[in-house]
Length: 506
Image (cartoon, rainbow, N blue to C red; front, side, top):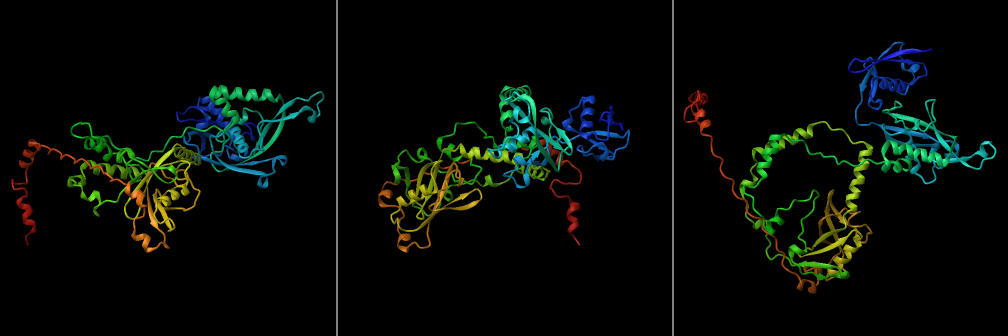
């Protein structure tokens, strides 16, 4: 029995849709959006302030004839839907219960879901199957014809290639879980023509550059890093910029450039390179170029010997406003990252680690002597231990090497095969501390760690001094404001009014 429903959008425009009891609400939404000139993927339906499940047919939705539905706009960020693919018996080997379960954004098409399940195992083929006509009973064949996938969702079959380009949201699945029953149907199109049609379709939709990626693999979106820095008001930005801007532009010297270098976001120690400490290098164990520095003569650290300005530690109004803006930004609600965004972030992080080709490691011994050496992305923890043991005078004594990673102090395995950059997470310039083992003798602890031949070639480590910051010029007082304060009522030239002083008397 046919009936009608009325769909009303935000501007009070109406669209009357003829329905049947078996008609799916997602089809109602599609027809209404076509009449109202809207994109169905970004809208949903409401009835009496309740969201309707677009995957249900009319007879199960509880709608009466002539019901008025509201066309509401959905969130732009896709939600996560758990998809279970029920395989036919011929394809169920290698899967538990004949089902494959994975989570996808609601904006994913059925074709891409099939392609993704195919990529999980090399023997799977759901979209490029072929079958000869002789197997189906037709005579005079021998040519391969495309065996197209057919998906059944809640009794609704999607057979054509165009139907498989519908997203989960267009089918009414914006959250929760959905079961897709997979089947196959031999078409009248040869396999090579079907592949050409599929490639031509994606070329017309996405362009020539993306046609091959759609037809053969899942597409990947470009990663946009999530910036957690709060948005600051313009007045705070201006004050912070004025505070950080030097009073007079001048060309800094090489020492000042080294001392004012921007620190890394990770907890790393800035280590002078060979050009900073001196061009002379020597050949260490394993024919590795190294730089050896003797221990400091004074027990007082270099940082404690440098003069500092007390005004550098006094917070200003700009600092207070910046801190307040950051507190307000951290108190705002933020949307949690989806599984796809988390995977993209991990891929971008792995790519940044892969781009690191060489790092500088400084080994600091207990007597405060240090050694600088360069390591590549192919060096392992064993390479670092071999270098340290080759520098020692007592090579039979046990020892350990540790460094401070992003997650805290970490001990490097003595004979491990972990790579320094990709596995241990070292990057840039890293400080490694030499620690004696528990079974090390007291005689070895009391003597210098490195060999005498290495100490004879050691040089003094020159630490660049930080240029003293210039004192800020005093801000001139506003004479007009001072006069208004002095001429105000209720106060005297002394500062504290007489009536205020009388409050403390009993």
